[in-house]
Length: 232
Image (cartoon, rainbow, N blue to C red; front, side):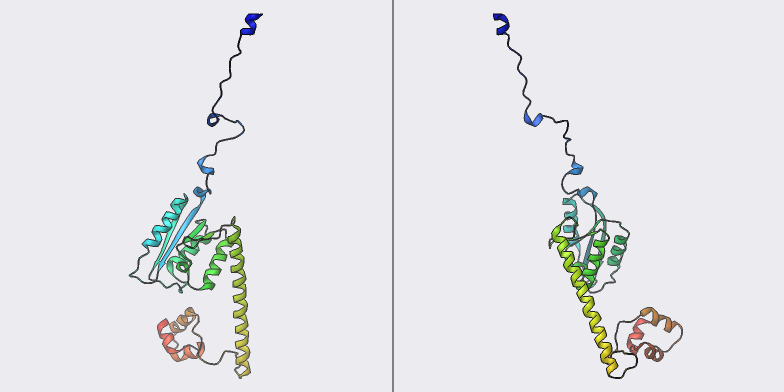
């Protein structure tokens, strides 16, 4: 009896906390860490206004931004010597076309004015990208239209409201201009004064190819002859 009492049960080895395992909890892999950056394909866009300027600073910061998040660089679009007011920049149009084809998930620019200097173009493009599920990021201004960010959703709602307001104002001005022209006796309702310079270039080219004179084209379109000469 005394011998059995003296028998000491073996002690259980204590496993350090950092080595304990729980079969119901799987280790987190790198693919699930962070913001899921390895699944994001990002395109970067850079622009300078004059040919003697360089985009290297913008491109360097944009590449570093993508690399720091582990994002895959899907393409680089660079317009050298193009004004931000020109919406027909070749690389900009190519970027928009690739966005519509869903060749990437996000577009990053250095600043908003690198994409465009007209508010209307900027707002319309960002809203189009958002409807297609593409994020728009201005890395130096803290702007990111990520769908999971409530602040970005608020920004997009404000942009949409601004775009709607601008369209309403433009429509109101057009209607007021037509009424003013009609009140002064014009049969077509065109505003009186200097002719508008917004016109269909393709139509003018077709008229010139058809052999119409500058005077005939000018009479048909309301454009000055100097403008018609530049088209041809």
